[in-house]
Amino acid sequence: MTEIKKGTAYGVGVGPGDPELMTLKAVRLIKENEVIALPGREARETVAYKIAAGAVPEIAEKELISVYFPMSTDSKALAEAHRKGADLIESYLDQGKNVVFLTLGDSTVYCTFSYVQHLMEEDGYKVELVNGIPSFCAAAARLGISLTEWDEMLHILPAFHKSGDDLDLPGNYVLMKSASHMAEVKDMLRKSGRKVCAVENCTMENEKVYRDLEEIPDDAGYFSLIIAKKK
Image 1 (cartoon, rainbow, N blue to C red):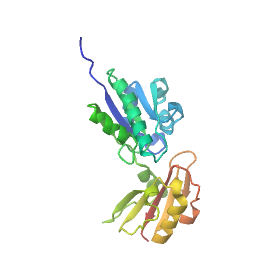
Image 2: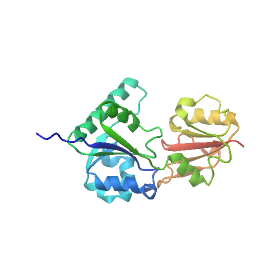
Image 3: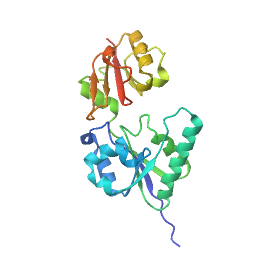
Image 4: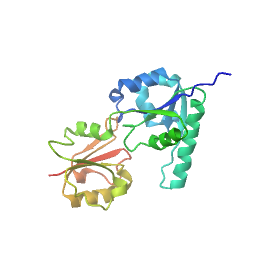
């Protein structure tokens, strides 16, 4: 009996929100493969699906699989979800099918797919990453500002892990995943004395731009990104 060649898993970034910011490679991979994985309970309700559908309407005819990751700090629950997700994707790879896993922004920056990637690679499966436009690059462009100039450093931090810290390193900061601790993050930014601006839902229909720290609401949405520059 001929052994079935295992498929390849692709972790594909779909960019920050505007379908026009998807890469040609991301579009091609969706068109060429039949199994598309989305991070969420219901594949068609995920933000990644809606972005991709704007550029590749054919995705509606694909075999869509939902890979759910809970919003939790419980390491055991997260590990179980990552394992379950890897097993689900591997079940398709074992059939010789490729799986294109769509993720917001870039597939290498604070991306949940990374945890699944490590597990699948440990299990002997082939995984390829396809980068997309990172949210912080899109936000800087929307604000019309540079992230770095000349010899400036750039520090990219998950804000919810850093609230209470001092932003005292030279250069500029990008604070991601800020929404759940926005009040504490804003207090940290006030102490830093930096020029602060932010974009919520960058490049999406409900985008909001804040050009001053005090404009940012404490209840800003999940997709809120802050840029803090030295004055």
